[in-house]
Length: 191
Image (cartoon, rainbow, N blue to C red; front, side):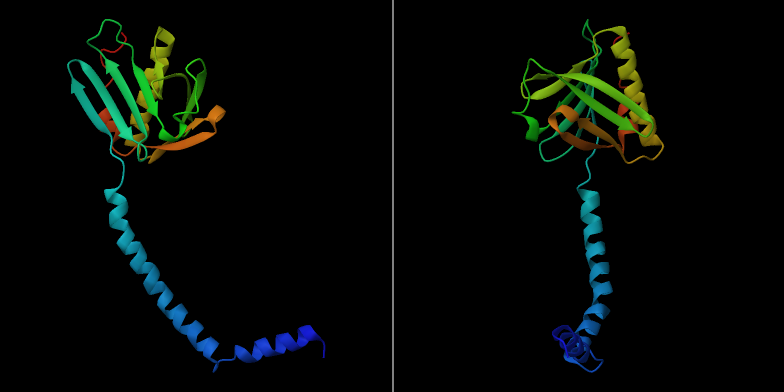
């Protein structure tokens, strides 16, 4: 008998119904669903507690909606309605990228929500990326972005996608609660 046939016959003998291997496998398979159910039940509460939350701040005529994306990552949409320039601004701070960009270079931030896509030319300042909607077209596009985020959150979408391709970075923007924070945020901003 050849070598592989001998191995096969010994494997068949060791996995017979009365062998210790078969009984331990059967007991493991019986316990597995209980372990998975316990793991899912114990993890479900902690996921809800750790979910990022949109926050709104209205202080001295400056309105801001922000969300923490990670341990020390942040996205903020601001409207300084009381200031003469009243330029809406988007701020993105990603700790991982902090040393990766130059203040002389513009970086394209792409935000995708279902069929909607916005590309923002971000400038690096003080370790963060900024977009200032300076002219009418930029303010109109920015207003559309904020409306798309709020309506997607209202429709039940759970996240939008963010990407800075030139830096090789992608991230998710949670939308839960964004509609309450972003509604009315752009009123009086850049009109």
